[in-house]
Length: 248
Ligand SMILES: [Zn+2]
Figure (cartoon, rainbow, N blue to C red):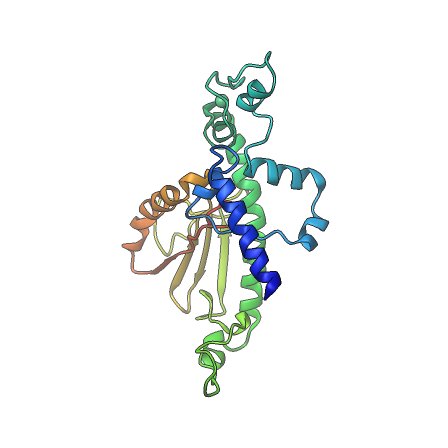
């Protein structure tokens, strides 16, 4: 209890200092971003350059043109690619030159690839179950006086619990688009998971927004895919802010 108390006091002090720092404390204003806990066991396995990037991008300490001009007299604060002011936000999420040359798309697709692999593994596991998940595990008995739900995540129903014939397609090269026998649409969701037996479609949309824009990006995606809700399918958006400012 003493350790926790001291930890809380220190954390409060740290947050107060951070909130007063306009630049390095910018993260204190990120409202829709999940806090990310990076324990030592994870840090230990990360590549040094990746740790460095993680920290320096969070606290705006990367050598962006704006920072270079602040640190050195002879440096310009202009983005060399497009001529606008080279802030961290500009470089990582709003440089028109990086956008038109496909750099942001490349990053999006790299993240999508990793997300898609995880989704496919999960779908494979679900499909391998003989009995759909919800039938025998959805309503566990709870002892008198116990909390309403034990926190064992393996017992919780998930979005795929209702069937075991899920198929997946990802909007990456070499994969199919949205299944035409469900709906004819020009929309291309990043990840589409569907089950013929349950007549359900799950759409996963990924975006890599600037942390301040997580809410706006979420809204934009919901609006974009609202059209598909009008079809007679069960539509569920897998949209939730992710620790690294990524929406899945
Ligand atoms: Zn630029």
